Each structure stands twice: as structure tokens, then as C-alpha cells.
Length: 331
Ligand code: SF4
Image 1: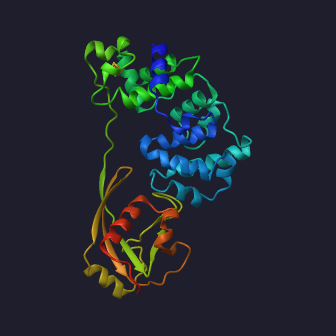
Image 2: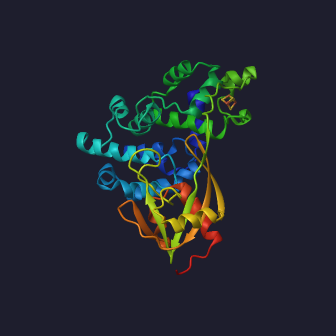
């Protein structure tokens, strides 16, 4: 079965940039980006990130703002902060390299069993499993297992000793392209012959309970003056830590007259967005006015420079919507 799967992988694998390297750093970055994010979304970010920070040392030397800026739009920003923090620890404690040691990898911020297993097997050829959602689904069906612990143990047992990295990627690839969650394409599957689910006709896999979501109202104000827009930097801790965003009416240091104007105006757009467990509804208001602000958490930024700014995805959407509705004109 392993041989059949590896043969299929050799013939069918997608040509992805992180599959053309054995650099543990590049593999770590790609696996971190791929957590909770689709391959197609990750690709441009991966290229930009590796170009901007080609090594652990380069990532360590960069400012957190520069890292956030390259990450901006990919979501789950904690991952970027973790990479940066781990780069510091790798530079100070491991000579700027990722250690070929599963337990040492697990001690780094942002690295769990999946990422540690992926780095160990793909970069260092060690037989560790990398059980993510796709991989667990494949094993559950293939072996007829339901208990999460039994599935993880099976994943460890199954890893090929001769080509562990390719084998793990083959299972991931099978889960991503053939053994799909709702309708597996069994007729194209290289391991169908051995598959418990196919033989028994039971494809249901225990799913983790969907996280509860909460509805949040998050009004934003697009304050424009000439070709510049007013941005506010979020605190270094908590949600969207350190990212820049459009101010909300409450954070805006507005004099009473502006407050009145805002209260009377209608939003030019309403954005819907999700961050972790929040379903956000964000009405976007427009103010064309120069407001005097003080302190490092406020900045007037030229619209042309926004692309290189670590702006939250919610605010990026809001800026786009606001610009569709208003021409940014001189005061
Ligand atoms: Fe998945 Fe079907 Fe292949 Fe079994 S035969 S592993 S259910 S695609």
C-alpha cells in the first residue's frame, strides 16, 4: 500500500515551490502558512516571504512590522509573530538553524505536532507523522478508525521508513485532491484496494465540533485627506496585535462636531468578515477631513503606500469598499 501511494504521488504531485527545496527553514515557513490556509492562497505569500526573509537570520534581523507587512492579508497573524519569535530563539540557541530534533522543534513557539512532524520528515528524512485534518480523514477511512488517538497512532505506524517526507506529503496530497471530505473520488484512489471505507461503504469521519461563532458589530471610519488616509495601530497584545487599521468611531480622537457628523452619516458599505470565532459586520463610514492626531499609534498614510503597510484584512476590505464609493479629493 505504501509503495502504491508513493508511486501515485511521484506521478501526480502538484509542483509546489516548497516541494523543490529541502531547506528546513523554507519547509517550516510553508507548513506554518499552510495551517488553516489553502495552497492557492499561500503561494504568493510564500514567495514574498522567502524573498524578503530568505533565512532564519534574515527573519530574526527584520522588524516585526516588516514581517507583519509581508504576512498582511494571510490571516491568523499570531503565526507571523510566532515565526519571528522562534527565529530569535533559533538564532540565539541553535546557530540560526532548525534542529533535527522533534522535541526541540516542539518547544518553539507556533510549532505543534503537525509542523514538527512535517519538518522532521520532509527536511530531515525522519519517520515522524504529520497528522493534520486531511491526513486524519484519510487514515480514518482507510483503516476504519474513529478514535482520534487511534488515528494518530496509526499515522505514526504507517509512515514509510525509506521516504518519510514523500510519504507524508503523499497522504496530505491524497486528502487534498482525492479523499475529499464530502465526496471522496475512490475510483481515482491508489489505495482503494486496501480501503476499509470503500469496502464497507462508510465514509463518515468523526468531525471536530464546529467552533461557536459570535456576531460582532465593528464600525470603521475611512478618514481621508487629500490622497492620505488615517490609520490606527492596534496594541501589541490581543486580537490582530500590532496591525494597522481604520479607526472606529470610538477610537477616533474626534472633536464634538465630527462626532455629530459621524452620527448623522450613513455607511457607504457594509463589510462582512470572519476573524477566528467572530462573524464581523463592519459598516464603513467616510469622513473627508484632516484630523489632528498625536502619538505613534496614529499615522496619515498615502493611499499609494498602503500595499506595503501591515494593514488588517478587515481594514483592507473596508478601504477598497470606501474607495469605490468616494473619489479621494483635496480638502
Ligand atoms: Fe479515501 Fe476512497 Fe481512497 Fe478510501 S478509497 S482512501 S475513501 S478516496
